Amino acid sequence: MPSKKSWALDQAPLNFDVPGLMAGVDEAGRGPLAGPVVAAAVILDDLHPIAGLNDSKKLSAKRREKLFDEIKAKALCFSIAEATVQEIDEINILQATMLAMKRAVEGLRLKPVKVLVDGNRLPAIDIRAEAIVQGDALVPAISAASILAKVHRDRLCEQMHAQYPQYGFDQHKGYGTAVHLAALQAHGPAECHRLTFAPVARSVR
Image (cartoon, rainbow, N blue to C red; front, side):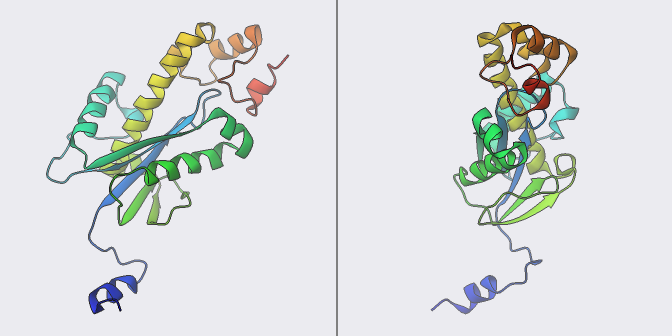
């Protein structure tokens, strides 16, 4: 039989936030034409605050790199996960993003009591969760997750550039810039391209 205390906790209304670990979750790479979509989950340590956390898009690359190392060093735990190009093409980018987020949460060494997710959709997880629009600018744990996901994906793009230098992944990070679209027309898609994305599909010979 559960104790009265645990019974009360189990029966608590959904809008009641029990004390405990909170995880922030965000993704990087929904829009690009190539490469995986990446998600990160972070549980910060209140005893070791990190100054300067913000939406990764509002930070310089150099600042993101510095915070990436600091988050990994100071967070209670973190997890970075991906959904592959093949998964994106099979189940669509939205579902692949949710899959990457689910993998990131499930990869945490510690289980949070609640997950705060940037945006307006939630992955299918067995933990209470809340979607927060613009959460990457409002919630430090989500900001930290956005930085981990962004830096990790940018590093993947550097690897893609080393393998396929003709596309310029080191510069545009897979987004559909004029340079990238011209390279697609000249060379056709590589294995790292998302074939279901219209600009890529149009370049298939």
